Amino acid sequence: MKQINLALQGGGAHGAFTWGVLYRLLHEDDIEIAAISGTSAGALNAAALKSGWVANGRDGALENLEWLWAQIGGVTDPAFAPWISAATPTAEVWAKALKYSPVYTAFDITTRMLSPYVYGPAMQNPLASIVQKFHYDAVCATDGPALHICATNVRSGKIRVFTGEEIMPQVIMASACLPSLFQAVEFEDPATGKVEAFWDGGYSGNPALYPLFTNGLPDDILIVNINPLYREDLPIDSQSIENRVNEISFNSSLLRELRAIEFVKRLLAEGAIKRGTMKDVLVHMIADDALMNNLNVATKTIPTAVIIQRLKEAGEAACDTFLKNHKQDLGKRSSVNLTAMFS
Image 1 (cartoon, rainbow, N blue to C red):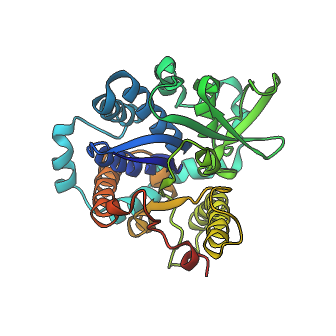
Image 2: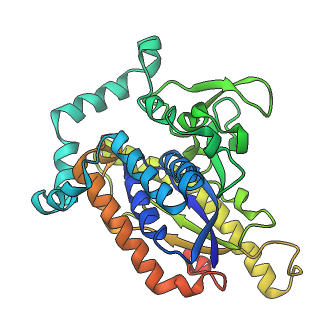
């Protein structure tokens, strides 16, 4: 049995790509998920997987993930999935149509000009009705994968990682709270006993890797990356510029942790520090930057059946490719060349 940890990025509706990765991964009976660190959409996927796993193993996790994305609003009956793929335009065409639609244009202008606080209590986070349906006795259980949810403390700017019994509906909503869209999520932090305000975890950890360094957890960390690290085209319109700024911001914390891992691995390889004093993390990554470069902020914000279905299929395909090329590396070596990444 190969054991791994999962690090699940946030990225709005693009989190359906992660659903596809998890769908494929859960069909590998000889791979066991030991721990998950998730942010925003990654936190939703992680909580759905964990609660389903505790209830009914792999089948329960698969059922819960399908339920989650049906609730988010972009997934129809699975019988229609092939029809959706065959009868609709490419993801790139659909993304452009959505970006320039009057509905999204009006939405974009409104969120740029108005604070979510102008609406008062009427401004409700649409995720509330979803996350409240999770079974938190299972989400917080000691059985199944250890679960870590990342949010950003608004006042301090520091990352807050919630785990175990600390996880509740407000924590998952906080992890996915974009400040331009929703009011900060405020609740009593179990660690301080004070009422704290939180925004999206992506600003400080997308996702945080350090909770996965704990002794007793496997060395392998599989990162599901849904924010492209590289874009060839220079963004020139306001929406594209803002989207790229957010992508860079949301990737920065991940890249810092990966650079730290690369530094430690180099010291271990050179014998500068004794093996066993620090963890020799094995890093793996699943991504589809080509697809993500064809999508945009509109497809992140507005879930549609077309994009979600294509993202799920892309996630399955990307995971299948990873398993064919690198399954044998699990437990032995990194499949990401960190030195080349930062050279």
